[in-house]
Length: 232
Image: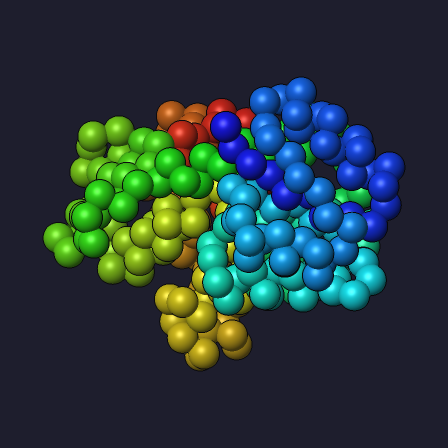
């Protein structure tokens, strides 16, 4: 059974989240601020963290930074601050997803399931990845989708491998640009848009299945099982 740590200084929020998550089959612990949460994390790391941003002693962004120095535990940020700048900051600092209050509990549960599925992306060996419909041989520079080999350019292959390693996680434009083009990519944001478009054509293949979702003004995420819902 997966364990989730909920962090918020509003008791009503933690109570609601605890009840809903427990009813969905998760074990739930709570903390009233980032400092208490980090102490619990160090003592017994959970499978996923859901945290508010604005809290006393240690806020959600500081908690995210502290956890990221130690582990890749999925982190979902909840906040009333609905600005692209704050979302990008939280994601660039290591958060995996961002949900604005008020939110639908069904949507939060879907985000939780998506983040926990990330652990289903297996590292078969040091040079092999598998997740959903994809298998990637990093050493052999070979990628397959539903058993069919994909013919990718070097940068398309690098992008797909990065997205699969972080399946379900929002990858910001900045992170993608720096990973693939280095610091020079910061001044060429259109690079990633064009590359994503090229890769999508090779993955979607006119089947109506969409694997790469857009997060407007923020970045992209890979759904390795695909979805038939339009996300542009």
